Image (cartoon, rainbow, N blue to C red):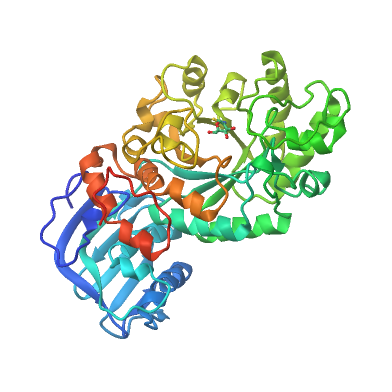
Length: 504
Ligand code: TNX
């Protein structure tokens, strides 16, 4: 095993090598011997590895057409083995060891999440045609070598704003399957905003049935029933993705205030809005009804969310005076703990006293911020989503048809060249829990739109979250990224052909 960083590769027989992986692995050594997948290959699942073996089989069968049975013991020669609990301790909770030789493929991890991440690597060592949905008549080799790999940060996320535009459960699942390829393990769903409310709340039913009807620019809305939401969460969990639901407050609440008059200080419902202004709405801070509403929502959402976190918004509350903002969160923060969850919210929430377990999400463009440095000093950890690097809704160039540009233009290189531990003085490596690439959807309407904004930038943010800083540099990355294009074409992913990359 080499030192951290792109390993020196010995010649490999395929166009892909273990040193081509995205995210770049911690240690990788390429070897010339490739493994050949054949109609006789079996997948041997060690104890507890059955689900991951079935997932791998599901990935490999459509394009190969091979049976690839999952077996407890290998009868023959051509075997892909998945074993739990036999990995080097360095791989931790989410890492893996992968060894590919001419005679066998061996994947080991301490947890099923680690096996899952190892499978994502294994997948990239096959020809791009493996991603095809129909049988491809060709040979299948897995590039040889050894990988010992684990993440830099525990949390690597993507956010989908389903409030500005609504995306169906099938569209959300499709996005989950696209992002897990790059070892993303968190999906933040922005479930409410001025333009629409997207989750059924049984104690306030009109939030969804009425408040869900609208969307940005007057487009059709929609919402998830609690059953549909649970189904998305379960689908995500089967791919080792934690869903973090967010209800935005005390601003970004026009949809709720348009259907429940009692959420307004004057007791009058506001008109629904489908424009994309921000910062005009605020819950009525002095009204007890507000806290009954917020607690009902938190209680119901906590009950259908197995993940640790609940997002309580906090951004751009320009119509909530500072003292009110403080008073609001003094009442609301304890509700999250009351229902067994941990707070996350946009970084403005760091202005109010929060438990040290709370995870503010940084969205600004770097630089000094006394509130954040103080929170880090108290022990809070952060998720880093600097808008000028990680926002997937920023335009790539002036001529990008979708997106916004308030944080500047974000080309593929801008999305890649930043270090989460060097953005805010006082918020260093130990204070960073992870990274997230948010996709706000004011201008995003279809899955093709989502893909165009996320690919290729999401792969860069994913690598920043996983790979050691020392293993990353633009020249190496752009060469590796170029080789992902045939995979995206095989998956029908509508990616942006950035001129910064010499696409394959
Ligand atoms: C800012 S940055 C927002 C969102 C918008 C986004 C558009 C932040 C936490 N909030 O309300 O959708 O800009 O880029």
